[in-house]
Length: 250
Image (cartoon, rainbow, N blue to C red):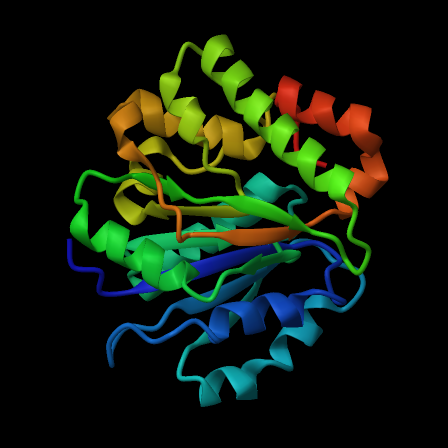
């Protein structure tokens, strides 16, 4: 598949303190070809802290880096609604064929974009892709967090595979580090705002049931780091329960 246009969606609710860094982390990704740079779509999801205004301050820097920044709003609260708005904008307004997604507190590795770009370009039947996700600790490294975080995620994938009888869940693509094709997104109807399970779990299941487990991929160099703030907020036990029960993302 020839990837003519790609986009990175960042759903953001009250992320004024973090959104500039998220945009910057995408903007410094190496350029693949003279005509291939990811467009960045920030979806301000009913924020009250000036997230959209803070994102727009990055417009000049983005222009210098030769990629386009789009800031849109989605008043309906919830990650699923924000992702739908961003992904649809990518498909309908930018004619994107591949759409990636990170959270506002996610930092992609410097080879993140080339890795996902090349994998989609060479694998036509790939509908959903992800890679390793590690925690960064917002200034306070705790080894136990890293160990327990990986253990909880690994156990959560195994539980998902058993619960839904889908071995593809062992390659589960979390919402803070995923890429999908416009064709797949459109065919499964996007994310489900009123789903009883987490938006990314629901989307993974829809992809597998439409295209099969082989349509999910895992790319080692599509690495990202995510904040430990939710672990701090929930604590170890509630975090483990979150990964095990697939409840709606906090």
